[in-house]
Image (tube, rainbow, N blue to C red):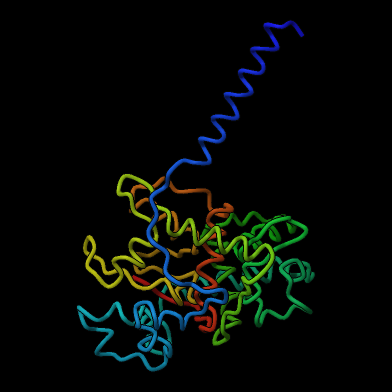
Length: 296
């Protein structure tokens, strides 16, 4: 290599290193962390908003508190879950649709086996997710796995679509009443949890909001006509039927939150959304699954 070319190459290499070092040092505004501990659980909200006492048992939600214009947020939307609310809604239709699709996909038992259901048993399967899959070399949520396993059976169920979420509702309902129990104390799930926590608290967009802005800093306060609730115990009812006539998976809800705060939504099923899912799932540890559910 000629001397001039070598000098140019060295200069470009130095520039790349400089830019890389600079990129690592880019300042990001953060909403301050709260103490999540090494083994987070839903009951930890007792030391955050202290509302856990009002929603820890959704069979005993105070109807007066739930209907109060100033106190409804303290029950964390759990008054929308059965047995408090037994109204027929779109989530039940989704469950029926999911059952139909599941029977088609699992005609030979391979779909259930792909999802990790031992001997085809769906009870408790929801509690296994999110999980690290060695065959996929990444952490995945239930909806991502439904897409993956359906594809193997020749059916396209895109993560975030109605039919994908409907199958998830059907499967999730078999775990009703069973407490979430994800372990984020070690391995890939711990790494995912820590990154999800960071993303949850990182401000972005033209509003300079983070997820934690609403669910930590201004929780319980009026914000643009809404009153944010705690992020503890929230994952236990997803996917959920929104009263605006939409079945939403947790990742679809993430995209909606991004748009509302002026942030470009990410790809549903992305590592970033999955990391936030792991983080929020850990904050629901100990709280029972409820599905089909409904939210405003």
